[in-house]
Image (tube, rainbow, N blue to C red; front, side, top):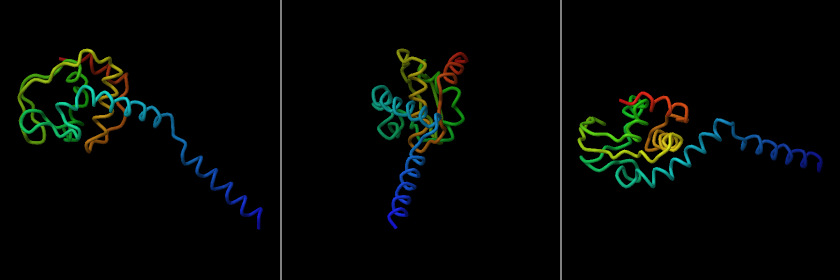
Length: 140
C-alpha cells in the first residue's frame, strides 16, 4: 500500500514537472512579451491607453485585430518613424501625428510589437528581431 502511494505521488510530481516545462519558443515569446509590456508602459500607454483603447477621435485604438494583422509589416515603421496623416481603424478615421520612437532599438520595437499584437484582444504570436529588421528596411 505504501509503495503504491509513493509511486502515485512520484508520478504526480513527474507529471507536474513535465507540464510546467516550456518550449524554447514559449520562453522567447515570454521574454519579448514581458519586455514589451514595460516598453509599452513607458512609450505608448500615455496616448494609446492602458487597454489599448486609444483616445476617442484623436488617437487610434490598438484593439482592432484585423488592422493589426493587415498592417503587421508596417507596424515597425510606424513605431520607429512615427505616422502622419489619415488612418482608418475599426471603421473610424483618425488624423494626426504619432511621434517617432527613434530612440528604440530594433529589439525594443520587436518587444513592443510582440506585446501589442498579443494584447487588447490580439493574438498574433512572436514578432522577432529578424522580422522587425526586415520590415524596417522596407519603410516608405
